[in-house]
Length: 91
Image (tube, rainbow, N blue to C red; front, side, top):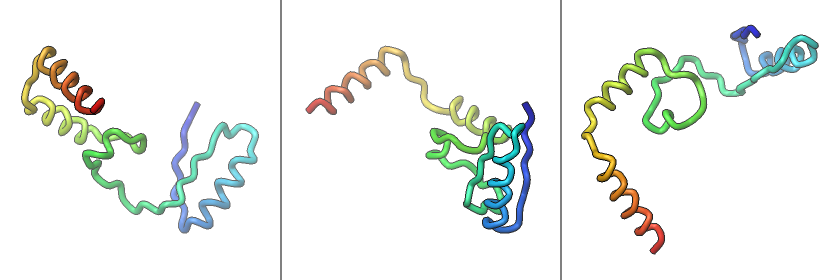
């Protein structure tokens, strides 16, 4: 399977093209996003858990560096923290 990215002037034109492409028998799917994103923005902390555009190699490297710098926690400490949080939520 192959993928094709097309940039179109204006959301109306993009919608018309998307409708046309959906009618072609060998086209498997057409994804049309009405938002006109002029440039790809850097991912925020919240974006890491959302589906969307794939992160760039630089963003992956940044994420790995942040993970390496984060404080270490043992499995037992993590388990205790989770159990405390569960207990708190049950109240």
